[in-house]
Length: 310
Image (cartoon, rainbow, N blue to C red; front, top):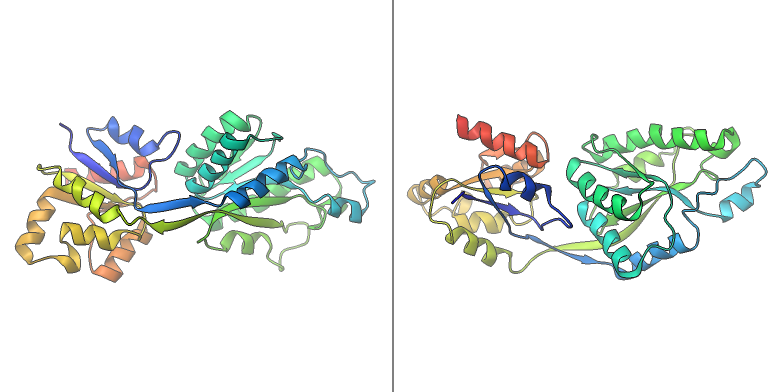
């Protein structure tokens, strides 16, 4: 039997790239959710109402529009997603209540995992929309890419310098979680930017996150169920790190060098990136075996392969 690889995350819907990758790479992927995600139904209803009211209408302002009329027709020319949970919340709303209008617009995202989830949504519900930003990797890089890409799109549509002012240019809707960084709004709406470069972006909180009470118990059960060596644990965020180390008796929870060495023969730890690695280092004095160079199934898998060949 292939050794398990415990993925400390909620399995993405409708498909998960980590399951696809590791199930064909001599591992048995097992998802152990760390975080509980609760959708904000009232805010998602508001998002749906934006579609119903024409806020995403493909109609563009013309030179005949007055500034007042254009501003009154507040609408968006695209959407931004930087987490899979935001995509899933939006998808859930569509599946439950439908989408009253299907515009053709740019969808901006960051990182391959969120891009894959967004692609599934796009293919089913927004087939004429386009996805951009997968290669950026960070919110800051995505924001700078949007300043060039989105402004370029608007100039092609309007071909009128007057309509490039921030008051008339369609903004972007950013679906976010309760906890998020503000680098994207700050970059797009930087008052130091020229007026024709600045982009209005509205954030809508569509989900909140908290650590699951059952995580430590479920993680311990999965660890105990495997008696062989070579099991991997992939950590996707600082949440759950303390419970993971406590179950494995590693870091500050080691019960002596013998216990730690025995655990290390059985379990290896990989992090999705430097933020989680540094959290383990700085808060618990624990060094994971692997830190993925890229936050993707391939990035994690290749890092594990290099480690095992050393």
